[in-house]
Length: 166
Image (cartoon, rainbow, N blue to C red; front, side):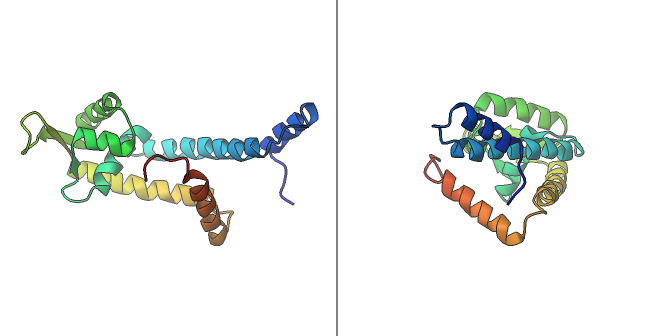
């Protein structure tokens, strides 16, 4: 049997106080929230080594994944990151000041703008994504590769009916 953790202690307390409640969902989400927080804190630490935070990483990674020429409109960028356009603008301002992204007029829309990853931005995101992935792998290294795949599959199955877009 697995060792008892903080979530077990919480659900056990609820069983003592409200034995009629099924706390299984609380146990699942409690662990997802804890794992997310621990991983999020570690990712912030890793990205800070590259002079960026997670919000800036999201922009750089979205541009990088877009492929050559590593550019998108601010609207497409915001939609891909599931962020507001206002929040995206603030991120872009920081990235532009750091020389990691640039904005230029759209060649097809006089009112439009294109956001492009700079060579420096590409170097930073390529190094940061590799370091972030190594950290994520470290966080899961106590699980076998088969268990990691099983966990990924179970989480995909849990998310599928809840997500609005693929």
